[in-house]
Length: 619
Image 1 (tube, rainbow, N blue to C red):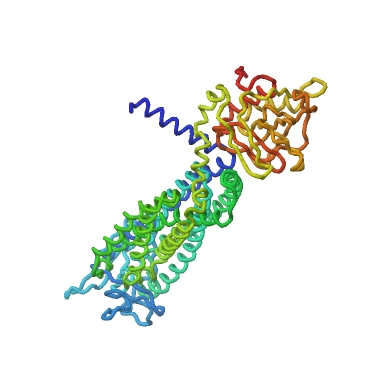
Image 2: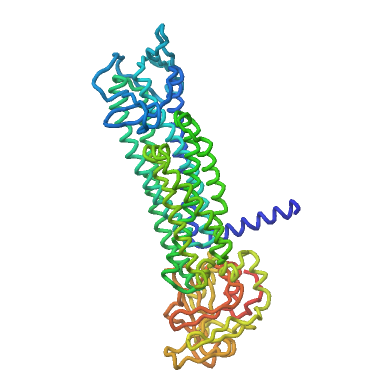
């Protein structure tokens, strides 16, 4: 493929993407809300990541200068303890660092620092002739040096471990925001209810976690001030600015999350109505099947990210500090989580369920069960349980719950094989068969003769399912009043066609008698134009729409205004062949590529002004 063809292909895809994003005001608002939210969240999360990274650097400098051996810090019974191995194990020795009333040394008055001082912090350890640590002299160049005792320095290992975990959590949260933006974009491109629901649930989780982070930061700061500053360090605080920055960022993040969640919720409800009407049009309704496919797809989308995130968090946790030394089977743990990450890719491919492939489903379920077994076996590890209990972010991921839930729903989908369940899982494919995602080619397609393929035929006793044949010529329709003058609202509509025409469409409707017994069974709409209705108006729910019908059953060229607007059957997809849709007592037989706005309005002008629908003229 040459560079020229590649460029054309890229431009074509961008034009399709732009057409889908700007399809309605709801899709446009949804996309820009997701984009702005992602950029703002990344900015705030990057600031929090930077603050935590500076704190880790400062604590690591002090601990490295004092040559303090890292242990397992834990707060138990209102005391800060440093253990040499996993707490709770036989033979583990834990030393109480703070939380007692006695102190070995006295220290200087309280000292604070600023962000700039933290970056310039230096430390110098003081040892006695025997090589025992006496304290650390810290200096930042802006204030007199401060002395930290051995007890104070050791207690800072708890803060160092806490900030390091927070930094890792910030990195995962940054990746989550990018993933959420991509999921929102896929929702618009596929017009998918499961993706829409997964995005909404993700925003709920993000908002809840942001609120918990504010509470956790406040509680952790109180523990730091009580056990470290006022006890172990006797009033010396070198991290005041760090806690202030963390709290301000946490409050800003939770405020943005709540605002974005409310906006996404409102727009999602609007999009849900549109997507649901499309699903009903193509596959009908089934509450149980709809709920099952919604839950399965949404849990699969969420589990895909959170399982990978928990795997990355665990591998990072095993890569440093006392945990690396205390792990007896480090290689086994790493291999287990790497295998989980590799299996995650094919496990996400749910093509076996979509197409009811029994052999593929067996492999799909086998991979899911392997992930469940690996995740369940990890809980037998004392080290895994210790991290799960002491690391709130790791526990909040709840990847294991999503994994088990998705596997259960997977089996439920298997039980629906050969029961028409694939119709609900291939909605997008059905719409794709009836649609062409190339709005800029519609003008050429409209200039060609109408398709001659036979229309879908319905059989049975249902009187609403009538048989139609293909329309081979446009209906001769001229819109005018009995007096011969053009109505004012028609002139207004024609003026709007050249302005903002993207929400207008034209539909020809066969109005059916009110009772079933009186309904005729026409051979084609063109051959029996008993009561042709020309409808035009908004394709968006809640917007204005109008319709015209003949004043005489024998003279279809004279139209008068109908007070009732046409039913809401406008779709956002491009119809590639004739189709029939019903709404109440009206049956619509239409061939309108509504996504190609300029061509649709061109056809609307021709129909209203009496020209053939494929005629060409200049605006």
